Length: 257
DNA sequence: CGGCATGTTTCGCC
DNA sequence: AGGCGAAACATGCC
Image 1 (spheres, rainbow, N blue to C red):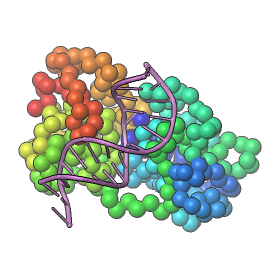
Image 2 (spheres, rainbow, N blue to C red):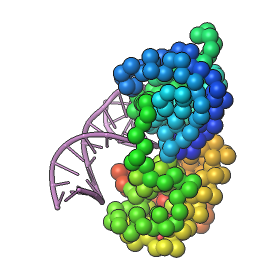
Image 3 (cartoon, rainbow, N blue to C red):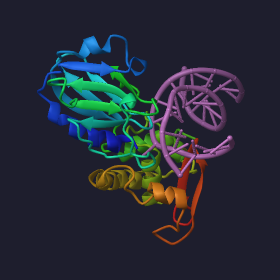
Image 4 (spheres, rainbow, N blue to C red):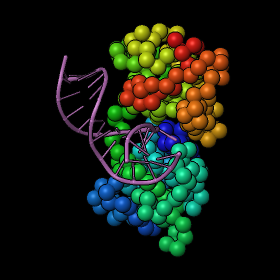
């Protein structure tokens, strides 16, 4: 589930902790830098930001980075902003906890609980964000077009590249390409100025709608559609599925050209 | 059991 | 040097 939209949902949830002081912490040392717990104890949380798919907890010391991988999720003050992963069972095992931040008594639920069964996620201190391109909500048509013009690989792979646009994941890329009417296997360099403009319009509009609905699984190309491949809800043509850019990709061969 | 998964990093090859 | 495709990572689920 974790794409930029989920990161934004969790960022909003974690904002309630601004102004609190971290009284204690636990980390799974396999997914955190050495000395993490002593580095964050007694820090005061000053802001919560998002950079692409990363949630950033600013403090009066180092910034804490949450990197969700494929299955990471967040629970704030004991309640989950997103209940379960769409292809996960909904289990929530204590042994999957990778980070706990308390801002009060240890017998209370942690203010921030990062839980990740698969352990592709990790936590960081002062993460290097220099490799991230403009955010999916603010990227401009000219920025996008400038990158696309120099890329021979598929538009799908380009949009997944966090150096180009930060925050888009596999589901959201398929979603915006569906709305923009662009086939995922098209070479980036062949995407026109007009199409780049359409892509940006779609990103701003549809991603906003999906954010409000609950994240990257709430679009037209949702997990059920990806699995069952019903007919395209725009034109009734069969949807197709293939590996493009090394990722499972779903698109409509009729209206995506 | 085999295959698949919403992400990132690394490797080998141009 | 940098772009590209494939593999690897760790684990749960169907």
